Image (tube, rainbow, N blue to C red):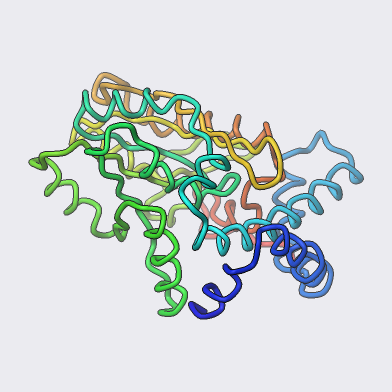
Length: 294
């Protein structure tokens, strides 16, 4: 896998997009039909106001985006810092930097929106080079896939922290001599035993991971949301929205619920650019498991 990434990363992005259009999108969408029934179900329940034709167009747009993400991640392996600064624009970086210095640490929530992997480039765009970014990740079962993910994420800067080691890392960072940002993607489903915070999200009763809120309160960290929009193919704009500077001043669950509202608004801006292949609504409240469409 690593060899394939290194070889294909030598190709210009225009050629990689041609591969996405003609060699990835058609077989994934029409031959393998990768999680197609799940994608359709997720979209139909999320957007009941859309017609069958609108939903079909949205499905197709999503699979085009999915193919683009695959080749963009590969391209990012060798992309120069200058190119990435043009492709990934942080509109109000000062908000994140100021909060990191003020609070010593910040949790930056984001979702599987746009090209979330490229957002790690924030490390190289800080004016304040003392700020260190730690990207939280879930260890992959496949060793090669895990190695590839760590390679690609660390390539843009920052340090990867396995989610089960995040608490230990924050204890260490409590006395660090540098401000830091914890990049946390928390839009996927929690396990039933960790499904403590529920809200209506995309028209459905939905549980959210609340670990980010728990840690922000425990370590008194600032919290922001990174809103990701793609103005055109291969380009992304990120706008940071402060959720709170003082987490313990908010009611219980308010940080998690704010994140849920912000990411839903983000998804509704560009619905085709969220990761619809995830079985987000597998678990229902007070039940073991909802039955996925077959």
